[in-house]
Image (cartoon, rainbow, N blue to C red; front, side, top):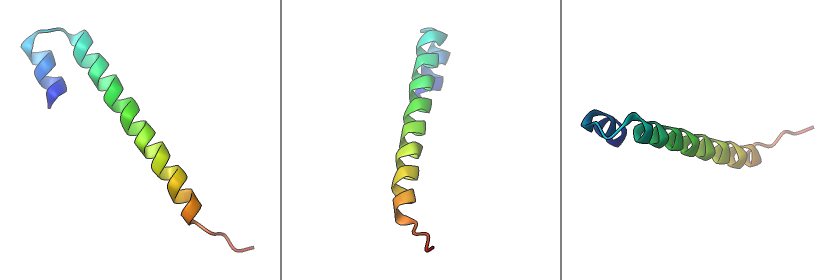
Length: 46
């Protein structure tokens, strides 16, 4: 994984931490979008 390679090469943990945070935020956004889309598919009959 690119994050691990950057941290092992010694270029700094700051860059690898920034990459990890951006990856985490991207995954959260994708999950949020999927939840919004999936909630439109569900129909509750009254």
